Length: 341
Image 1 (cartoon, rainbow, N blue to C red):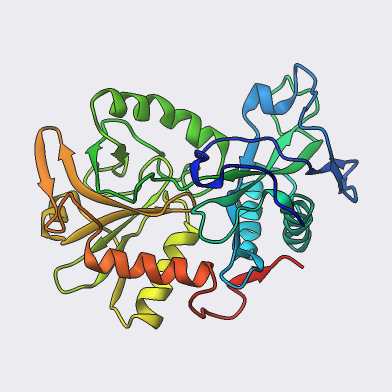
Image 2: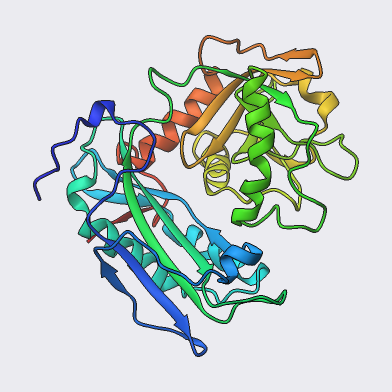
């Protein structure tokens, strides 16, 4: 298929309307067959559950043009499973996981002309989401839902390479103990907006959220998990019931242990031990890994030995290996890379 006439090397990380999207409705206790549609518009009742009580969840993944020209995506089964967990937590009917993967394939295939070419630095971002749609005025779950998927081509998250960023220890809490921090609900991201705007106004790129109970342990940022590298090259990731189970983080841990032969620890990470790490990064779908050069803890600066010029050497090896698997340059575990038939 002929590609759209787009300046792939210079598109930003934003929304661009594409030709097709997928929609399925849950009514009378069952999901319908679903279909592709041209319309990017949604019309709902003013009292819809999504507006009144924030009953909405979402996922994020990408499609790539691999080195051999195939269009592929990365571990979509984990996105399907995570969306099921999110739906259950918010009393929403899970969209069947096998249908989730097939629907993603349908939308990518229907928008194949928008999948950026290999080597452009751009990808096709995929956004599945679900919402309560029928009128709900009492505090209770909706009984009708809409599941949709749209795609949009996006440029690299960092123009000119991933330079280390400076973040701050936030005075805000991201999630309450036993709350919804471990699911991908829209309400989690809404509450983080004031904190991130405040951080940007103060000159920081992101927030480091601590556990709400003791405020002594590292959790995550508003939209990414942390990874740390010790001076003896051990990969350490924070353990908490309030952290979103990042697919990128889980993949990085596998790459570290099973491909690069590193020691991996998934454990509680305390704020007062950050000074002892050699490297730090944020991991997620958008940028894969964003290196962190410094953390500001209320005026006390924690600078990592890897510095502010480029990714630390271990972080870069993890990044290069994982993106190599995603793009087909390196053979990875079976079923990680799924071809769009």
